[in-house]
Length: 564
Image (cartoon, rainbow, N blue to C red; front, side, top):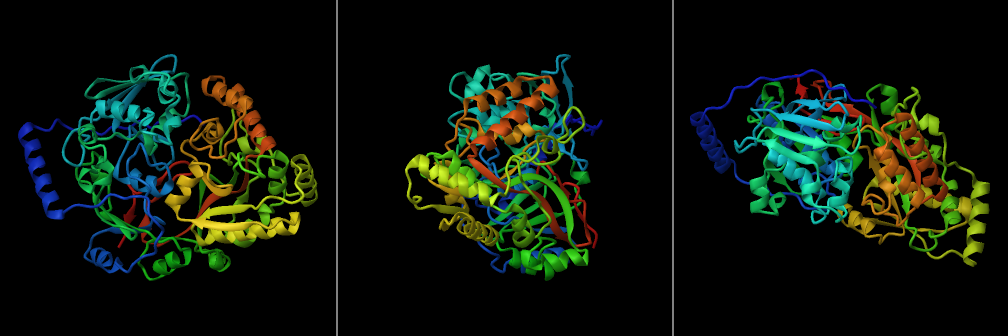
C-alpha cells in the first residue's frame, strides 16, 4: 500500500532563553508536587481492585477523563523493547515518532514537520519541529532519533522489533553482529535534520516509522541510566499525554502533556487505563460507567449484536498456533498438518469468540491491495482447510514415518485468559474427536508465557500477530530464520531467500509474487496453523468521540473527546 502524507504544518516560534528557563523551573516544581510513578515490569493479569471511584470524581469535577481497559500491564514502556499491544497502545499516546497515523490511517507529519525524498526514492531527509519538546522542557533532537534507531538495532539491546528497521541501509548487518553502528545509514545532520537511506525504495516507510519501535528516547537519560524504563521519574513524554500515576496490576493514569507541540488539538484532560483481563468484568465496569469502552463478552455477543450496540472496526492481525518443530512429535511435517486439518475454524468463530471474525486459511490478513488492484489474501487463496479424513490419513502417515504406535504426550499452552482457555478446550475436543488424540492444556501468565515461547520451551502454543505496518511483508518476515518472532524452530532456505529478495525488490508485481510463494511454503511445511483474522468488536459510550482504531497500528487518543 502506498502511503501519501497529507500536507500539514504547524508553526511555532523559537522559545527565548528566559521563557525556556521559566518553563524548566515550573516543570521541576510540578514534578516535585506530583510525585513519582513506578515503571512497569512484566506481571500477572489482574482484575480491577476498586480504585476507580477517585477517577470518576475527576470526571465529575468537569475534567474530560477517558476510562479505558488495557487488559493487563505493559510488558515494557521502553520503545525499543516493547513489542506488544499491551505496551504499544500506551506508548503510542505518551510518545510520538517522526510520523503519526492520522484519522484516515495514513501517515502524517508528527515530530517531523516536513521531509524530502531523493529522486531514487531511497533517501529521506526529515526536518524536526522547532517546537517539539520532551516533558521536561528539553527540545527533541535529530540526534535522539539517530540514537534510538541505532539502539533498536544494537544486538546488545536484544530488541524483538529490530527486524522492522532492516529496510535501512546497514541495519541488518549491524543487528546480526556483522557490521558497525556507523554503517547504519541514519544520521543527524544537525539538531533538527535527520537523514535516512534505505536499501531500496519502500512505499511503506513513512507508515513503519510511526510504530513505537521508532520513537526517540531522551539520550541523556538513557546514557545516565540504562534502566531508565524502570523508573517513573525517567520516563519522559514527547506525545499528547504524560504518565502521572501507576498502580501496578490496576491502572495507569495519564494527563494532557502541555509541552506537546500540538497540545491545542488534544481535547482530553487525561486517560485512565485499567488492567482488567476478564471480559465479563470489563463489560460490568462499562455498564456501571467505570469504563467508556468495552469488548464484547462471548456469552452476551448475540444479544448485543442484535441490539445494534456493537461497533466493528477493521484490525489487521491473525490468531494462530505455533508448533515447536524441535520437539516431538511436531518435528514431523505430516503430524503438524494433521493437527491443522482437524481444526474447524468456522465453528470456533461461530460458537466460541462470536464476534463475526473471518476464519483464517492463510497467515496474511485481508486488506493489502496488490499492484493489479486485488487483495493479497483473496489472490493467495486458502492455504489450509478443515478435512477430518485427510487429517487422520496424515496422522497415520506421520506416525509410521516416526515409528510411533502412539503419540508422545502433547501439551497445548496458552497465556491466561478466559477466551484463550475456551478456544484451547475447543481444540482439545476437536483433536480427540477427529484424530483420537488426547492432549493436555496448560496456562501461564503473559510474561512467563512470552519468555518460554521465545526460548522454545513450549511444545505447542497459542499466538497472535497484529500488523506493525501496512504491507504483507510485515507478516511474512516473522518466520525468517532467526527472527525473534519465529518462535517455532522452523527454518527454510527458500523462504528466507524469497523474503530477503522481496525486501530489495522495487517492482511491486514481482515483490508480491515472491511474498505469495513464501506464504505457500509456510503452509506446505506448517510450523503454524491459523484460526481467525482479528476484528475490533467493541462497545463505546455515545458521549465519546474521536478515538481512532487503526487497522494497522495502535489506538489513537490524540483526537478523542468526551461530550459531557
